[in-house]
Image (cartoon, rainbow over all chains, first blue to last red; front, side, top):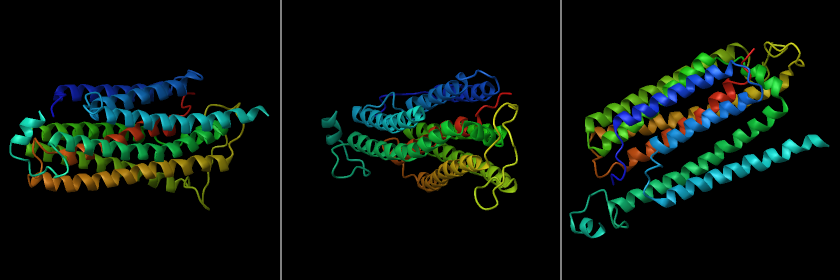
Length: 95
Length: 232
């Protein structure tokens, strides 16, 4: 059951990184980076989400491959939802 | 491995349709993740609606977003991340069979969760006072996006759309938090009673997964709702 023995110090390290990333994203919002602003904000959010999922939700050390498959399938479906809908709305302005 | 655990005395928490504790734990974890995937799709629909309207009415959304308090939003982000830490430490304590530490971290999580909800209530109250709640008394005063005099005037109806999405998304998120606080309250009681041991703490683990998921949703909600075009 203890296939992944993570120490308390490691959890606190992840916590500190998450706080630093939060401060970074707030700070970056006040700097004009043009079209890079939303990209940077989403990149930081995704990094934070990955840290939480991999280390706090223990997906990195999960023994069950089925769990990883389910998560990837879920993300794939979410990308279908967002990607195909935006591909539709994003191309309507042409006409 | 399966031979040795079958030979030893059975854990009372082991249900008869599972061969061993590890199999039972993996099955419960898989089931929890399947549930979380349905939650991803549930919130995904709202994020999708948000993205479409934001792309269509960017200036109105940016102006409406500027009326939200970054200070309160960022504070809440930090509070929620801290609660994720206490949850993971609770799971850690449970894994090592430390009952009192487990109860402590669960209580800390409940306190942080209630702090988040309290700050959210303050934010909602401000929005009511400012008449930013969609409905008959809705009013959005700024005529242009802050610091962008060259942009077209704000369409109040589109700003109202932003606030509709804001209230639905943060409201659904807050509802999930309330459910989470309820879950952890029950688990705190059972933990205090000594229900969970180093061999069996699956409910703590799965409630933790739920809480982290709610945290991840907020990690996306915060920048998308609060941080649109804040630069001058």
